Image 1: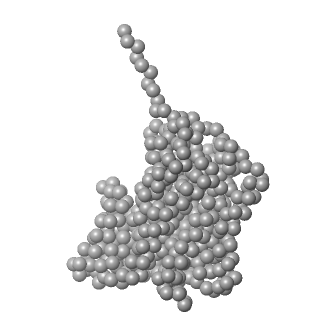
Image 2 (image 1 turned 180 degrees about the vertical axis):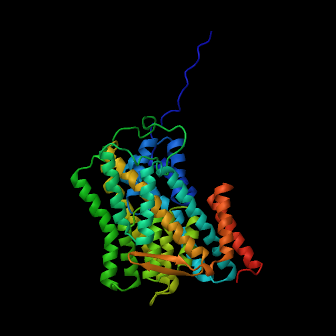
Length: 464
């Protein structure tokens, strides 16, 4: 009788060079469509399931920390894992590659937009994109909510966050701080009421940390000295703030480049909750306070970012481009716009590297800490309310041609003027919702289909 052979598990990777990792990070960057939820899913599939470089729990621990930070969590997650594998060089390679394809694409589309955006067929294309973006943001609410809102307290927290932001204009930093404190207290007491997978986790069997390249051990570079920590902080603060200071000194605080540098630097410190939360903040400030662009143009920019690879937050390059293009001064408008877009990108992403290289060593040492895990999980739940607020804001400015401010005591919010509803935008948005939620169409296919529908309406004479 023949013995039954043992089932051999997939071999644990032994080593990966930085050169080998380069091509994997480039592949991830080129496949990173569909906003942070889709990008994190791509990273999870390639790094956890396919390559087995990092295990499920370690991936989620890193993700939850990145969701705690201001700025785009998908790019920060790539930087974190790159740092885990190959120290600072690995983090820079992973983080920069994640940015480059989208940065190049958004810059090219920004040129097309200002040169040809008022041409009927181009306007119709963006009309279709705006309608589909609403469905994409709703899908993000459902995806993130499905992972984070697994308990009643988590759902109540998300609902409270939405009410505080939409109806009372509560500031994002205070909301994130409050959610973190609630989760920390819960974890400290061992309640575990906010436990959830995060929106990067996978269904079904998981990959154990011990069976991966990184394993379970703390790497040596996660034990830095205080001298190394201070050195890291000074280097990245200098890369971030010296250009800002130079602009303020040379150009003065009222120059458009100085305003772009200071605004997006401030945003890099206070916009918590990932890319969708950042967009909610930018929509309020860049549109309403600075007047760099209109709500419709903000939606156009988001449509660009959704249809190109890389971080959704690359829409900020488009915002900086338009702001500088329209206040170019002595510079040619296209040159000013290009410089404004690059400046917005620089001060948006350099802080992301600072947060990771400074904080990741400490976060790695806190794996398994119940209080920290509770704080991160509660912040993840709060993010759902932030993204829902963004979805409502987009809906108001996509489906209605006019909104009016409702104010009563501390309550203040934008309300739709019902008579101004746009029937074609509504129809396209409903079609996009059906495609995404019922036909399971991919994000890119849905956006391209909506753009084609907008151009078809223009050719039929419906849109002028």
